[in-house]
Image (cartoon, rainbow over all chains, first blue to last red; front, side):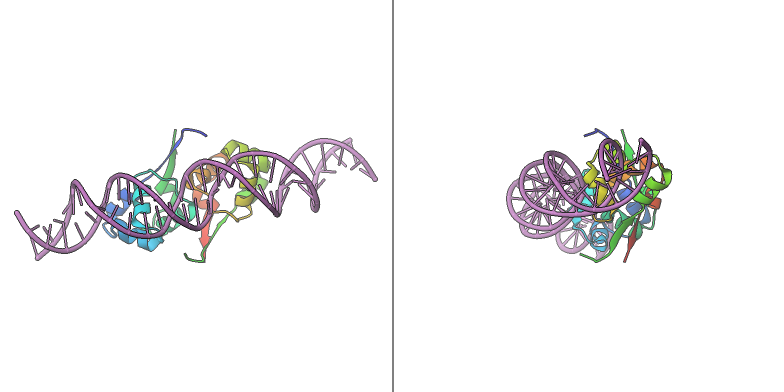
Length: 70
Length: 70
DNA sequence: ATTGATTGTCATATATATATTGCATATTTA
DNA sequence: TAAATATGCAATATATATATGACAATCAAT
């Protein structure tokens, strides 16, 4: 439809916190590591449910984690 | 996987603002009215892209619009 | 009462988010 | 420097978000 891109700083925040591996976060959220990998690489457009779970486990707001670019 | 529910106040905010009809908001966001209807009825788990577009056009934060309940 | 606009909802089709398995490459740690 | 762990990324399968078209129900303004 539009060519706007969804970006996130999941990987950045996860690494900064040095608390979970990609696989651990995936497990906490309830998705596979591959799905988390694609989300972190900004190659997916995840559902709000997954985003809310990531936000919860990383303890940062949705708005801080996800945004739009043109 | 889990039985947690995603809720939103899209309809509430839209009606309060008295600015767009369901169909107009759908068009602005780039989805069909039916999709917007299901989102407003909390029967869908929309993608973050759609959520960000709704948030943008209603001019409220993601965190204010979407949350989780157990 | 009737018309027009808005909304709820159905049934079917398509696109894509997510799962599964597997393997190669980094990165860390002993 | 080897072994263990973490990450990136294929290919294919499945579940579900979204589209399409249509119609009934609700509500507002005649």
